[in-house]
Length: 435
Image 1: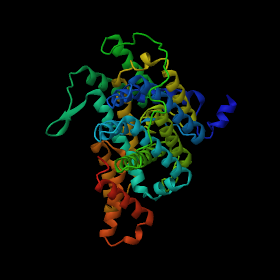
Image 2: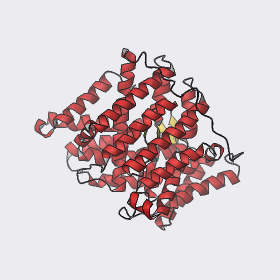
Image 3: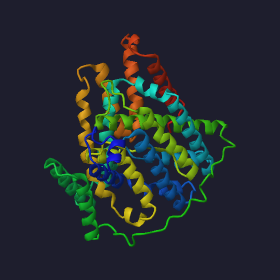
Image 4: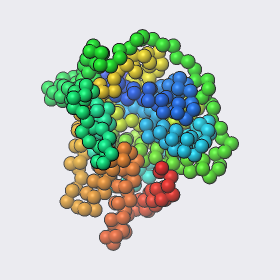
């Protein structure tokens, strides 16, 4: 136990083994839906769902282990939701490309990301992003978490005219979501240890007990090796123009999505300096690059840091032991998939909303009296939930920050790297690679 405390620097980070283990459980419960949703989405690309489920769990565990043991951060990683949708609908069905070739593109993208990380180029690009944009990313991620939680509870629904509207407050899921939100908020106000976990477990128990959600029919299930997706990718056509654009799209979205998530989570853990720079950033970025490569080998779409990690951070997780705990639970889930997937989505919805509210504290660091800082920051914040994309939020923030200074005749305030980043963003969206 003493060796574990020293390795993860628990005393220096002001945490304990029990707190880290609890935070890891909360994080896992908040993002365990990926074990169900990812196979569902990728199966529409023709991939065997059972193989994808195993690949999802193992690739996530590998990435979380790297994050925990190498970077010592409490952040969890798994196949990104936007990336898996792009893989299936944008690449496989949209471009009529076989899923094995698309996996090859993911493999190459992961290797390129790893190269950019170890050479320091990736870190230099993220360091060039202004502090106001980095600070805004924290609040933007918080709003995105909140909208995910509201949607999962049925408190908001799609509308053909206004795009989004209030859900049916008489629906069971909405009532459970509101009850969980009030319960979790009250427990936090009373400073009850494990408040978020208690909220998740309480709503789960009510859902099962009243028959509002199916309880697990069995607890154990033997996992199967992903023989059909393991090393199934093809590399023969990767130099064709369509595949090069796919690799570029994966690379671009992964860069800004991960950067935005890690900046927001880093501020939440208070492990950033006065310039908004994340401590041990190279090690943290290495985790999703390794996870993406491993995922392509096993048979899943790109792996990235998950915003749901904020639930574990708010539960007190501060070290890599939280991420290692999540990794262990991902591996354990290979045997307990029936139990894990029986936790209803609505049970973690209140936790996401509560954490989203807590992450709004980053907005206090923005100078709202200066239009050249406040407008790009505001656009960063609102674009993330409005477009359901962290990458879009960072992108619009960068372009608007540079554009305002150019039009104001203050070109000298913009660094060469910021010009390069803005140009990259404009080219990416201008060539239609984002869609």
